[in-house]
Amino acid sequence: MSLITTQLLTKRYPNGVTALSELTVDVEPGVVGLVGANGAGKSTLIKILLGLLPPTSGGVRVLGLDPATDGEQVRARVGYMPEHDCLPPDLVAAEFVTHMARVSGLPRTAARERASEALRHVGLYEERYRQIGGYSTGMKQRVKLAQALVHDPDLLLLDEPTNGLDPAGRDAMLALVMRIGTEFGISVVVCSHLLGEVERICDSLVAIDGGRLLRSDRISAMTTATDVLAVEVGEGTQELAARLAALGLRPEIDPRGLMVPLGGEGTYDVVLGAIADLDLPLHRLDQRRHRVAELFRTEAANV
Ligand SMILES: Nc1ncnc2c1ncn2[C@@H]1O[C@H](COP(=O)(O)OP(=O)(O)OP(=O)(O)O)[C@@H](O)[C@H]1O
Image (tube, rainbow, N blue to C red; front, side, top):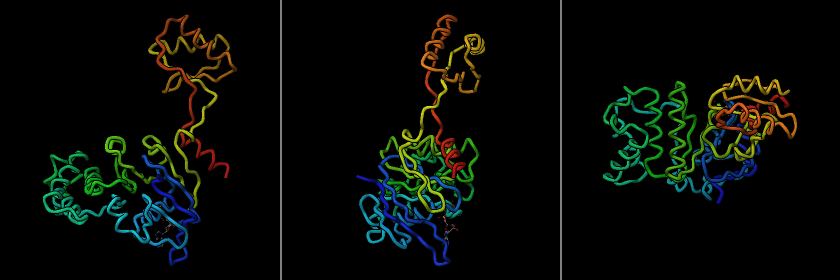
């Protein structure tokens, strides 16, 4: 079954801004990146998916339900992490997340247990009795994630979960999101204006621009092979580069290894022969793939 489908979904705000324009998309379960520049319409889409905002026209289904009419059922099965800071500074995290579990309808004891569980999953178990006001930005983001997880949803909608984090904090948050998707088997939609960031953790990507669909596909289908061979040897990279150059190839040393432009069918054999002659330990030899970010840069340049 589809996770999310939209059919010619349009949202026009009363001030005349068209935030979404005839968006038609079909998203499979998994970890999904929803990417687009600021103002592309990501938050608007999330609010419609949650049934918090009615569409102007068009149809939406989330887990097979229509959020416009079955909003409560949708919200019972979906966890939402909003973009902006919305946490009460004078509550301790355990209290706040328990409260959110109660709001979701869990009885008192179950709510307390689930809150501890959720805070443990996001790595805040030890600090759960500290006031949120004293937390770092990264910890606050984790509390927002814990409250989204507390009622054991089937789908998580995360609006810019790495907002305000430094590079290490971003990596940690992305790793956590990916773990939630893979270990708990929960589908996750991660909104971000940073394509390179979500590309690393997503199974598929929905890219929107100015409220319109730019592209929606599995990541594997979006990356295409380049005409460059990436060669990684355990040692002797310089030596190999010199040998390949002497054999008429044009290798370039790159942080990811030795990049050798393919010059026809024979290139593989020439590279393998040189590695064998020099007796170097081969770690990797494959055709380099485009990163999705590079693909979009090209598409944007072509518009
Ligand atoms: N309540 C509102 N009333 C009027 N216009 C709005 C409202 N909310 C959003 N917009 C406008 O709709 C467009 C899409 O905004 P939206 O917040 O959905 O984008 P976004 O991709 O989530 O961007 P950001 O990451 O900056 O929030 C923008 O032009 C925004 O100014």
